[in-house]
Image (cartoon, rainbow over all chains, first blue to last red; front, side, top):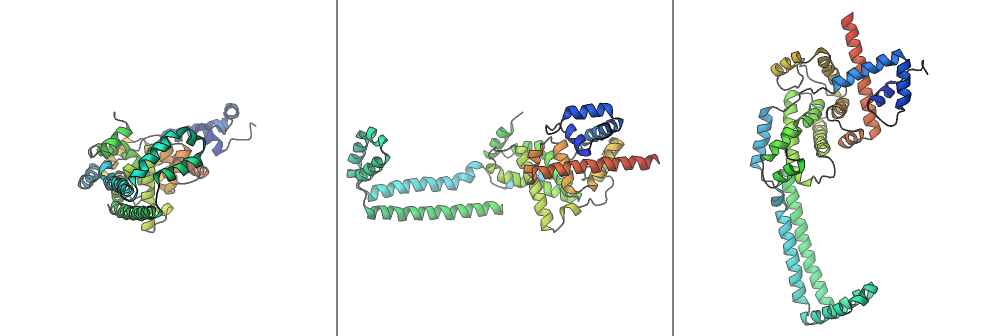
Length: 172
Length: 188
């Protein structure tokens, strides 16, 4: 053991305080071996030097230049999400408007009441729930298709706008 | 002192002056990465500016899933890689241009004064680090000056943890040998 010197990796793992090394074994060896004790001292000195701050810094000109460039750009979380938020709100209102326009409201309300009454039963069987919902709302296939087309247009509009926004951001 | 989260929220609310706090807080980290990767003093300043502008533009995408320091170091490292790739410069061939007094690399007179202030070993070490491949310098700076773990450095440089360890061990071994031979030569 005494004549089997520690490797550079072992010294470094020991000083990095890594669990993968048997620190007790290293300590015992260092106590016994003068060569490794000297090597460890050299590594400790190296670590001490490496931990010194080289005082790297940005020049004041660079900091001011960044602040100036930032000053001329418009960026805030709320401004950025603004267009997306508007599209989302518009989509929700458009969907509700479509539903109100294409669906027979008179049949929706009794349907919802029926749904409320049969709530306990519905919870037991999810298939019943879907069935009652469709019956209650009394949707017509044509209305559904129309609503789907309008929603697709809205989604397309949203997609185009998002792409435009991301292109503007990447240019900045 | 405001936490990073508070500073970021202030910036995102439109308080641009809050970004100066962030810059002052993280300029050393950015410099540790950029100054090791880019050897030309003027370009170091330009690229550091670019890094901070990228941080500002992308701040709203930072969701605190990692440490802010890791995220910033990632941006700095990737910006340097992109810049070197754009100029078709091999990362490890990017040697510091002759500037014997350059410790922090931006103003020779200032650096020369600092060089005198530093003790001799540290001055030699800085020069020895500059002789190492750039990636080794980044790994050593992040580990010893930013106290990042192997895992965090691996995330910053998008490298396996084993590679980071290997860079660290080889870098230190080379530095130790470099310092030893330097002192032996001086003794002779």
